[in-house]
Image (cartoon, rainbow, N blue to C red):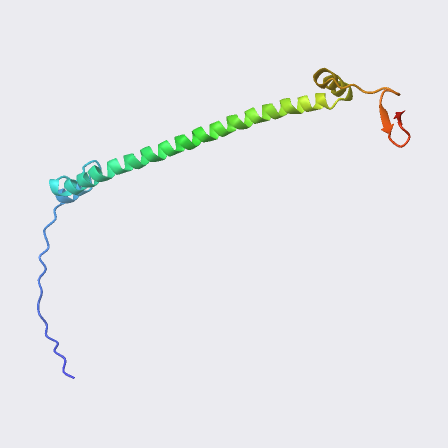
Length: 131
């Protein structure tokens, strides 16, 4: 094997940095300037800001619609609960035996029979048997 270890001198040209140049780089409030840097930033903001605003508008609209539907469902639930309470009260009133007889008499003209008022016809014997 043949290795070629040739040495070539290299010279690095380093820029001379002074104390004033370093202190300018350490300033906190100074932003980098130049159109080369701010043009891509401006283009990015120009395209992304409307997109972000549109997405935000869509999300807020969706949340608002969902909130409205939740409120409507809650109102419907409370209305049904009130109606259920009213129907249970009516059911309790109607199932009372005295109230049931009164409603049957008023609406259907039905009365409780007394002894001897209802008869059953016996065709073999040919007469009524009163209950």
